[in-house]
Image (tube, rainbow, N blue to C red; front, side):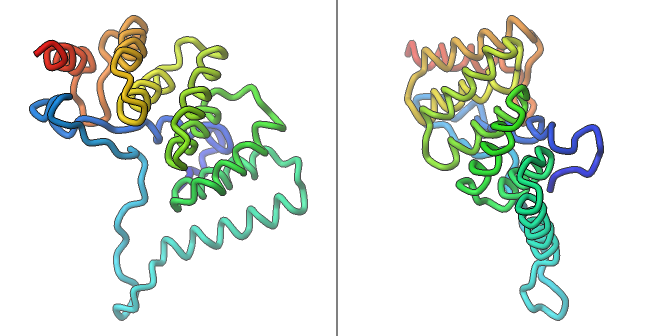
Amino acid sequence: MASDDPKRKGYIKTENVILLFFVALAVGFVGGVAFSAYRSVGTMPMGAAGTGVNPMAAQQRAMIDALVQQTETDPTNVSAWTQLGHLYFDSGEPDKAIAAYERSLALDPDRPDVWTDLGVMYRRGGDARKAVATFDQVLTMDGTHEIALYNKGVVLMHDLNDLSGALAAWEQLLTINPEARTPSGEPLRDIIAQMRQNANQ
């Protein structure tokens, strides 16, 4: 669920949406690599009396309804559109998230983090090429945007079978941050070395 921190409101979600890859180095590129969205909706507990009602999901839906009403009342509210996109992201509704993020960015396009979130949603919605194009747009705005570079590599390798493009993106990331790690903690440098070794076998 999106944070209520004023510093984040409507602007920073990207730190939570980096795309996760490599369950284990031992799997290797040739043997197959597992991918998933790093920010995914967690398993929620059963509601009271075992009704199966998810109280967090109900709260999230109430927040979505409130934000939809807010955007209808004030269609120029950038923060409301962005928060709506975040909530649709969290609830697994990529098409609605895309629509909300696009409205937000039409009003205020100079936010690389929100563009990166949009790129993740394009990928989740099945449009890998548009996801990569969006990450590239982020990089024209901020050539050191580490999450855009990382996610670009994930989509290139997993969705578009472009190993060389993925390696180029991640190696560019290493020039910015030599200590870059995957969300599961492995040094990205080690991942790249393993991929190159497997590709040459």
